[in-house]
Image 1 (tube, rainbow, N blue to C red):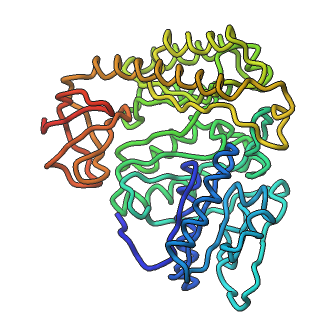
Image 2 (tube, helix red, strand yellow; image 1 turned 90 degrees about the horizontal axis):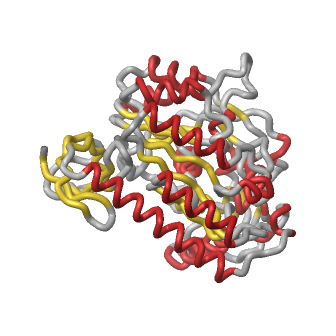
Length: 420
């Protein structure tokens, strides 16, 4: 796996897709000779994420007073003038511009510059081949970009543009390159990966693409997927879970809520019953699967009874790997105009969901205790097993390796492991 090399410092906020794109920007900056630059790749999923982006910019300038600061990512795409007016910032790049090598040249003026175009007009995702991920044992590969759906709480389609898929041939080349560099685990990522192929000839589906990708890269040891839309999982995905040992038994679903009225007001494309059916089908295909979910607490108009439906689902379905977000209004979205749930109520509901998820994770770990896990060592003494549970492996294992570890004792964060 590639280690640190000359080039700009890249600060990545937000999603795994940003992590993939940060490596592209690192390569472009290195080629352009921007060894003294700092690139901040921002997130805009919540108002808090935008605040954190501004905070990261100020901190980066304090830590690197003589560096050129480039700000890009979703927050920059949505509010380019706001970031361009910050005195710390030298250049603002949109989500399309940040992937173009020419965006990193031409530092001949002291004037701040903003290079952001209308992302909604972009119709293709240019393939980029990267050789590694600095400081990471796990690799991320973009399979698609953008989103054609309009959930009422979400601003991201306007930051990322329409759905655009990456062709299979390039994906095989990219994953083969990463495997050749020593990566044993790859995560397929995007904005809405279950929409993969909708824009390609023949409209291939995600599951079919993965099957062909795995056939094309037989030396890949492990494959994971980022968040899946329960309304759009194809039959081949469930078949892979059941029959392909290289597919990790860890599924993360973009549920957002488990109450039908809330889901309708969110403009989600699934019902509570649909989500339950998907989870039950995952468990039939892979009984040991760890199932996680994205959930929003305190969505506008959510009553106590509506919230209890979501909380009950976490408990009954034993959803063990949760990402919980107290609702945060995003200007420009329909939900921002809906009657609000008080902030303290949303935070209290989020805490209850986290507690239920922690209890589900404890139960999941109790069932795994004493088993031998296959752990990807990510840094000395630590990694994650196939279910994406953290495992301590102090004193053995080399970063980048997959090793057998006896899950000897439970800890607050996962397991304490010993050599198997």
